[in-house]
Length: 308
Image (cartoon, rainbow, N blue to C red; front, side):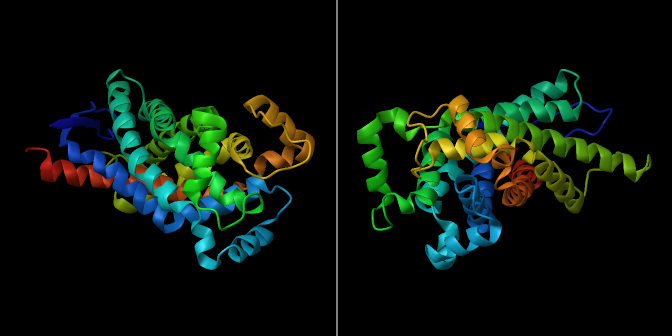
């Protein structure tokens, strides 16, 4: 069985639909697992800590995270939640974004616009199919140490939340996750494609038609990922909605609107940008893995298995 994915087009050409084995869905899972197990989870932990503890600076965050468990403190929530999430959401992103981007490219719009639309669709698909529960539990693991103590197992915490609040409880903040993922991957994929087009223009007419080198792909992905932190306020709202920290006056029933109001009342405008620095690093690393790495691995899988 095969699935079609779009290839990045060179300006002036038509997008071709490459047939690859369904094992290509493993490309997304493999790249996401690699991303989260290397630099991804430490960036995630630091970013989430700063977004939830908005009075802390970077040095304080590092100190507190290290005190929670040494180096392993920077990998809180990775096993099992980040691994479960990574092994599923990567496949969903690569498949959904690739299909949407292919259709968009053949409708005649630019690679930037096609990447934007593909990324937005892929991000929404991630949020509502695989990410809600896992993202919530990752945040619980990073923020719960003050509330429930370190000796309670992660599964016991999940069970308690489910008994107390049901399906809604363990998917708390899923709409904020959807907004974040939609804007995240719309920006990352769209801006990465725009950076690729810009690199081709700087090459000159003689080499503009040639495929990008691996380093050019990585540079374009880093630019796209780094510039996509503009939606940090959405991420801070998402973290606050899912946080297990208890603060006097904090609304019990969090919605996107009253959560934003609470952050504004307690921290002002700067509160919406807490954790921007680690998220900048996370955005670059995720986009390098999922766009540059994903494109390279998709090409390899297509060449090796596409004819079978």
